[in-house]
Length: 277
Image (cartoon, rainbow, N blue to C red):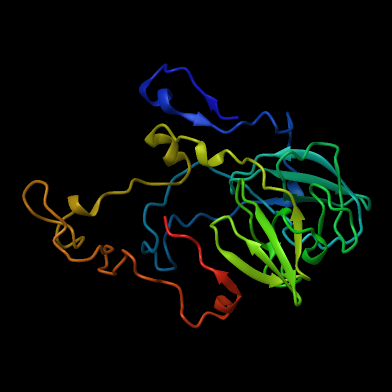
């Protein structure tokens, strides 16, 4: 459920935030599982801007999330559901039977006190993690491994879910959130359920200042720049683009131009490409 505000100001009129009522109240972060990352504001080792529109933002602390979850057949209990400033999804702090605590990606509807377990023969229940070939066709999973033992790389953002389409010849066919159909080894592990915070894409920032809090600096249109700064720049008043194809600031063609490497190893694993919008 998206939270809305009364229109006490122009920015408040359209501002919305995610529903944080699912989070555990009065939580203190687990310090052994956190660290502070150095900010680079989009600069490289020479101090030059290599990624535009970054800088500023609130101070945030990184939570070390366990995407591999290699503690096999060790049951754990969810202690807290927490907000993570470094990602769109919520995370869960799990205490295992041996006393160790770890952060994991929280699936949607995971609650404090629920039990989870990772293993090759565990029940197909929300939050559990097992190999793909044991998960029935039609089920939704997240945090899926590309290579067995590497840790989850697919389906990690808020609301993401990957559908199991088929099992055949040592591979599992997956329908990705983008609509792409992809094949991975059925020995790869995946977590059951959809990633938490599914309404994140409906949140309205509402004002420029909130973007600055998120480390996002303003983006300027190419058409209002000078000719030396962009292929679209220059002219008196509002001018047309002046180039046959849409280009970046550096003159690279963008519209309809394929950027995927033709010899990429995983091309053979893609059964159906995502549908263009």
